Amino acid sequence: MPDCEALFHPHSPENTLFYWLLQASALKKWGDSRYHLNEPGLAMYNNKSGWPAEIVDKKVTWSAAMLQRAKADVFGFQELWHRDTLKKVVEKAGLSAEYSLLAPDNHHGKSITCAAAVRKDMLEGDPAWITDFPPSFRLQSKGEDKQTAAMFVDIAKFSRPVLHFRIKPRRNQEALICCCCIEDSFLQRG
Image (cartoon, rainbow, N blue to C red; front, side):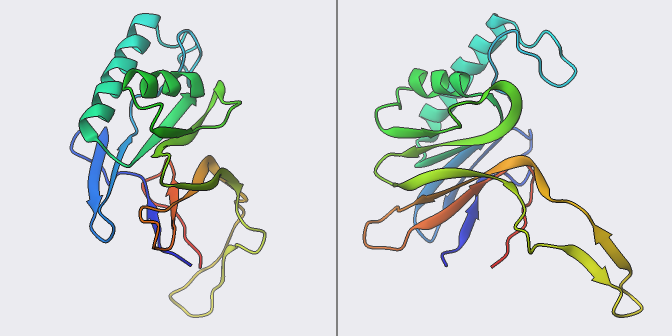
């Protein structure tokens, strides 16, 4: 199984952007986590009135400029509320012809998910958003030794769906499995 590369930042100084080079494959990745892309007037958290149109326009313009500046192969987005807003960002950046937008078609401002924009020539297969832990996954311990307490954690779902997709940066190499998630860490079994 190929190595997983997580498309999330390890806290940049402003907690907003990350961009780094994966040395093994020269794959350029970029991500945005702070700017909560949503359509104007749709509630987010306790903000029942949502962002005004002028603020959304500024977020779209700024995010599009960052995509153009980064020139990445894969863009990861956290805290996406609305697919259409991200589509506007990708279009404004002039990237829609070259990149596939990985965001659920039915994601219209009611909840948060992750998304990505991937160079079309790299994307392999269809993306999936994982919500449930595998049935065999258990966070538990019987307290086998005196340093380990007995515990059982009953969590069956991720708090936000994890985006899972495959890319092939080079045609003559095995595809990479990519995950984009909201948290700053993720569980990996395998």
